[in-house]
Amino acid sequence: MKMAGGLFRPPTRSSRRRKGGGKSEYQWQVVEDPTPDKAFHGRLFRLIDIKRGVDVGTWENGTRWRNVATGAEVAVVRGRMVRLWKI
Image (cartoon, rainbow, N blue to C red; front, side):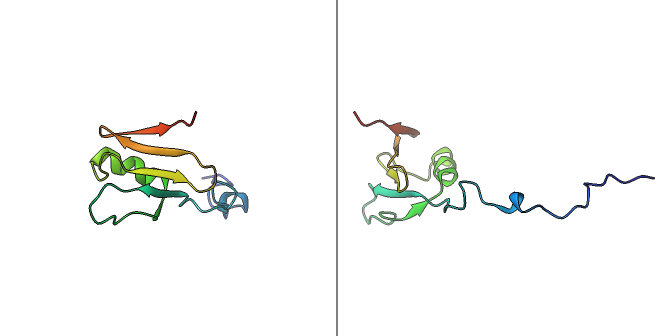
């Protein structure tokens, strides 16, 4: 029986790199927290965590995040995540 050569090959250097060129994935900072105790204000999250939290109802309407690298903003509006556009 012949085995495929790449089946047990160790990972290459490029496959070990983090997406985004090594930047931290935790780039979304809470800038508006509608909860009474402001428990999340100023904390950093990954975009995937925000999306999943919106799907299961973790985040309240009015919660807003800003990407610390790009300045892009997203918010929860009527139970959905929306991107906020600056004009």
